[in-house]
Length: 454
Ligand code: SF4
Image (cartoon, rainbow, N blue to C red):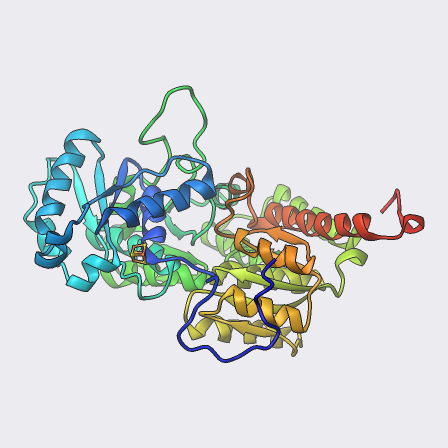
């Protein structure tokens, strides 16, 4: 397995191998699915759209609807304006969404289609909407596309208002519907009135009812996006994913924002909870304190099994940093952090985190790939891998247990329904980490060392 990956690391400037990211439109499509009765629309050739739908479907094991402008060679040369106009008419006529959210592909970006102007020329039916964002795939990653699409909704729909509605705008970051549900549960515990954008719960984890619903019950309502401008404050969860969208709301509607890390692990969840408690002037309820106490109890109970274990974490920047912070709280040693998403801020944040814990021997790399991560592991192995499915080849090649967390996980089921955020999510992460480490111990220890009680 991966036997052609050499141990010797050589500087690469042009070749990426086994990247830890995908392209912008995937994130834009996911963000658009988090708006109620929205049809994500890919302005470019059809292959991109098929690939991106497939990518999301493989992760969520759910339908991921989207339409395409289906460029041909002609549109690629002369522009895709008429393709988008025809698409809009067909989509509103046939699929009847309330809103079409257009994103772009490399092709339409390279030829420079002016989507804003094209949309102005489209005869949008009464009461329906069309918004857009530019998602050039040669910039950033799927995380950038997610951010851009969320900002696109705000740019088009949110309205500045002098009258405040007492609500909190919540940007949850690039997380699973299970995480969004957990965030909402905590928001409700703290009695915070809020609007979450996007909200893919009830869409990407919709129940089986026996009849196919193209637009399931979930998703942020258009009316609520319009009223984001009336919010008192917005909370950007995951600074590298959400801060730009919160900033867009501030620029357009004057809503101040606070950026926090994704609430993964104890300290980050505490910060989230305390922020909500301050916002709603509500005491933290006992139920949440109990969950926190259970988490601490579990961490103490199982401490000998994960203490000092080294771990490599890869995936999206906010998720990787969140898991790394929790690994440090557990007493583990996060040795390698890799995100495919470019941005020096990832490395700076990692540096701050590690210096807080006095850890020096680590590597944190943005715009990295799994090929290089594998090379580092060959030279100096780790006890555990945490990340998406693409790391399973390294796990097998080096006989390292893999905990699946983040995006994409395309070789397992159920994961997207369950959180890794909040105290409950942290309890789940501890269980996943422990099971991976203990299963390996059971499988490989000498017969006389096999323990019934662990
Ligand atoms: S990189 Fe460009 S061509 Fe490839 S799938 Fe993404 S948008 Fe399409």
